[in-house]
Length: 120
Image (cartoon, rainbow, N blue to C red; front, side, top):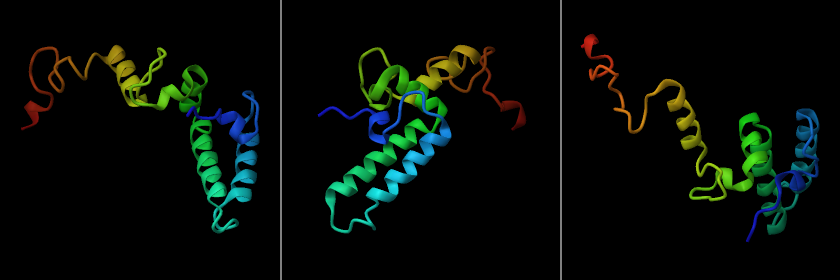
């Protein structure tokens, strides 16, 4: 089953401001909060969906990734050209700038010595 669009869940447009996003989230969260709807499984599911959408859209980097790749930006093994995992994506960017990390000798520098060895 495909996930619903996060903007649709929160009832906002893609050009929503942070203030409008927060307001919509708070309104929906209060409306569907499990404490206000005891025993209502649908309200609990909706509340979790609202929280998930807000967690992504309220973070600038996550929102940009979502806008570009959709739900695949946050799923392991997701295809479609998007990064399968945000941490791998960020790690790849870091490596391209600084040249360290996986597959490049790990903690060892360009001269082959382990970083910090001179401190021991």
